[in-house]
Image 1: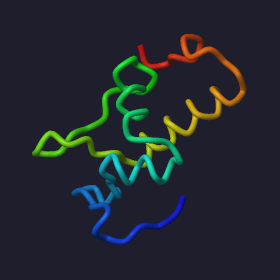
Image 2 (image 1 turned 180 degrees about the horizontal axis):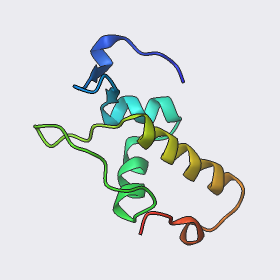
Image 3 (image 1 turned 180 degrees about the vertical axis):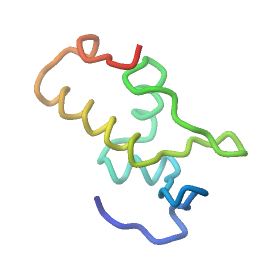
Image 4 (image 1 turned 90 degrees about the vertical axis):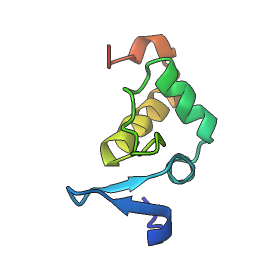
Length: 85
């Protein structure tokens, strides 16, 4: 994935890069509201939020969304690949 400057992401206490929704969406090539929608309908599990309640995407979250995008591009109906329930 493309590297973004430090001002676009932060590192948590576990040294894992964390990204705000706008940066995560740009990295994934989708819109922010699509990420919120995927979370709301359960295609991805709830995303960790920071102290201010802002979604805080990690590498695992980005991989999960990439998987969802891959399955959608393969033509699978979204209901068939809901793995997080």
